[in-house]
Image 1 (cartoon, rainbow, N blue to C red):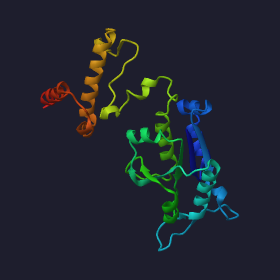
Image 2: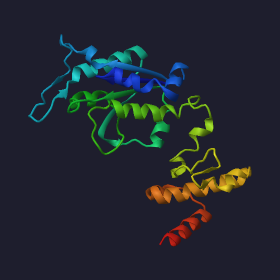
Image 3: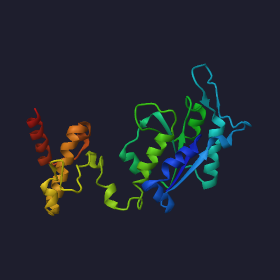
Length: 245
């Protein structure tokens, strides 16, 4: 899978994505991450890419032409116009299901804004998806783009060394991941749940599922409305609610 990140700060993105799992996947050629410096497409001798917004207002706005030329350079080189994601707090919230969906693409362009944003005209020309990582404002889209690349890459076959790792994580089936434990068996007086030491895989799976349901109710109850729960799990929730109250 190929990511093309249009940015004013390519070094920031490169340094953030060249380590750990994503860095390894990139070195192995499973994913390819290319940064495109929008400043390189400025017609200004000082590589200026911003100007004052019409109508007044605070701050500067990224101009349309350098952004368009950077996008066009990518699309011409790869011979098609892939989905182009504008990373913006005005977009719909990026979630796990969207990461899965985007991981099916062969190529993705991510556009990072800066200053007060980007001239609306070029967004209308090139953007296919408006996505946000949350209801807050960052100084630029680079950090959000890195978050998205990380989450999407994890869904690409071969990126995770253990394929099950991507299938039993938080938000799978609209449930949070169950609690996990490692050695030693007892730490500061707290013991590993006995079921995890039993070696009984069916009991372990059942325990983990129950813990996922309970943890979701405790920390993200909003997710449960779309979770596919059995009658036993619904009863478990009712019992836990009664005990808590």
